[in-house]
Image 1 (spheres, rainbow, N blue to C red):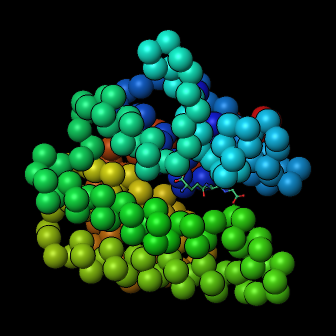
Image 2: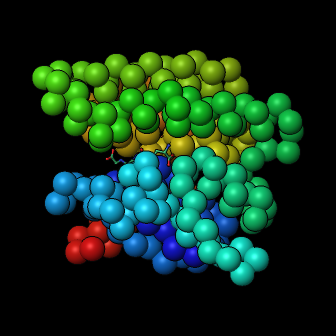
Length: 215
Ligand SMILES: N[C@@H](CCC(=O)N[C@@H](CS)C(=O)NCC(=O)O)C(=O)O
C-alpha cells in the first residue's frame, strides 16, 4: 500500500491516523504542495488524482492495483477492509453521528480553507486569512455545540471514531489561521484525550515533516 501525501495536509493526516490505528504498514510518498507550484499539479500526479489533491492511496485488490482519492471514501474502504479496531460505533445512530461530525469538517470547513481556494482568493485580491477563519469558526462552533450535548471522552462515545480523526487536524489548522480555539473547550478536551493515543502521536505532522523535506 502506498500513501501519497503531504506532512501538513489535514486530509493526509486523517489517513495516517487511520492506518496507525489499524496497524497497516504503508509506503509514504511525499507530494510537496508548495514547491515548484505544487507537485499535486504535475501531470504524473493528476493522472492518479485528477482533483490535484492529496491524499491518494494506492491499493492492490484481487490482483489489481487501484489509485483511490478522497480521504473519506478511503477511510470507509479501510474501515471495511480492516475492521479491527473499529473506528465507527456499533450503534446505527451513533455511526451516523460520527459521520456527521466528520462531514462538518470534511465538507463544511476543509474545502473552504484549502490551499487552492486561498490562493485563488489572494489572486482576486481578497483577505484569504479572514475568509478561512470565518469558515473554520463556523464549523468548529457547530461541532462544539453538538459535542457538548454528551460528556463522552471522544466526540462520539468513549473510543475514537472518524469524527476525532477529522477533528484533530482541523484544530491544528485552526491554530495556523489564528482562530481562538479557547472558544471550544469541549473540542480541546477531546483533543487532549486523542493526544494520549499512539495513533494520533505517530500521525502528527511533526513526525512527517522530515519525510517531505526532500521528495
Ligand atoms: N476532499 C478531499 C480534500 C483533499 C484536499 O483538499 N487536500 C489538500 C491538502 S489537505 C490539497 O491537496 N490541496 C492542494 C491544493 O489545494 O492545491 C479529501 O478528503 O481527500
